[in-house]
Picture 1: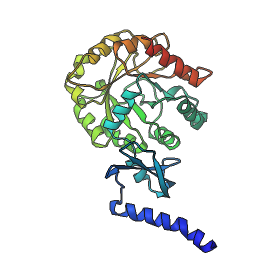
Picture 2 (picture 1 turned 90 degrees about the vertical axis):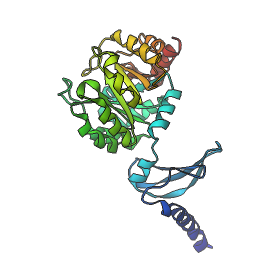
Picture 3 (picture 1 turned 60 degrees about the vertical axis):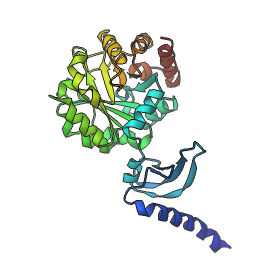
Picture 4 (picture 1 turned 60 degrees about the horizontal axis):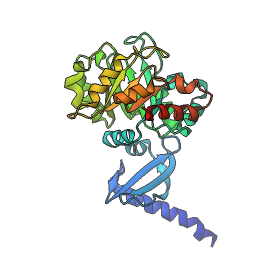
Length: 306
């Protein structure tokens, strides 16, 4: 009897491997109405769950546990179309900027804002060249990816972003946003981002008119309208962002996600929402609050009241 009970789990695991073997080295995202999600606790290779989700909306079913290579985990992340739909459905979506978190307690901080109900996390990457400040790079993105399944929105305030796009995608970024001011032509970099399976974002600084990125809009999954000059947190909100958001909102030929970043508080978020913003990046309004869930609720309520 004891021997039979030991064989049971091994037979189930072998059966599961046999289901997946024809699709190696990467498993299928969807087969005959089934979506197989491969997830480990850290996002790295390791023992994890294989969860079956059906197109008919029935309850997800855990098929078993097995060793999951990191490439399989990466294959389970949402593509840019799915991610754009998910974030738009969450609007008004408050995205914490991790630049303001306590990096000595990074795991705790990420888990705390995740528990507060945010739909994604925003990572501000600065190189000390394109902007007059230096923050962090791929290692921090990798560290955050290991402790959360939330989409990661990497805002690259760097020169020559095309050189680093693959590394940030490999590190775990789901949205990669570049600055229009950092490249001669954004289109090739936006196409590069999409080719890697990430959502492509394009940001413009307060002095840059929306007309400057007109030709690039069809290749954008997201447009980030800066309401401060990038480089430092805690700046005052610049009203020029509202006009750009209104222009984007009225467009019927393109429909990128509309994101705003800079000076977002309960006093300014309502005006941004009324102008058409869907995603609101804020750091100090959350991480300088004693209660993260309350901070997120207050921000969303102010946006919804607009």
